[in-house]
Image (cartoon, rainbow, N blue to C red; front, side, top):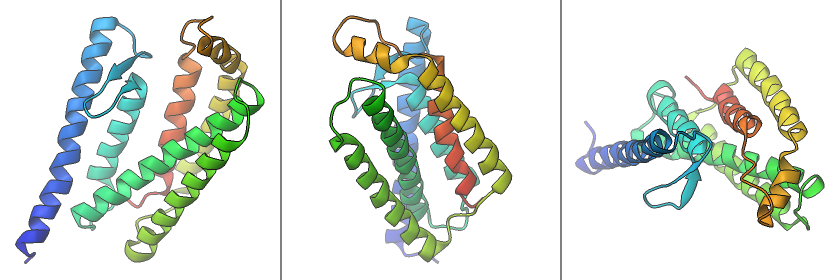
Length: 200
């Protein structure tokens, strides 16, 4: 039988993120229905403006990880490892974005790509620690192969959509928000790809 402190810890780590996700999804869908714009953004509780698709993708990814992966883990360990994996996927997206924006768009200097790369390494170390201790990772070859190919294609379509040139103009106030379906596609695929390395 678990000590009361561990029971409380499990309950807190289960319900607090779950309640936050429900609140964020409620805010996001409310904005989508009122503005009729899936690609817009919503000011979230405890956060600033976050793109609607980002909130939806991350939220449902977390829910999938919570209910369908690593069922043998204590809840508090599972929650931390799940958040780490999602943070890792976000860091990878940010790194790809910074590299593309450096060579195609308006970004100057390599400080941002280097910073994003360091963040990726930090999350990799944390994931490696959890895997060594709890065996949380498992390669699903077919799923990972398919989603990797889709992610590469999504990045290609994203680049050829002329997003970064439009983004450079947007930053100067000379163009509307350039976030488009190519951006949405690559964001979704680069998040879902990492479900191919989680133990189910």
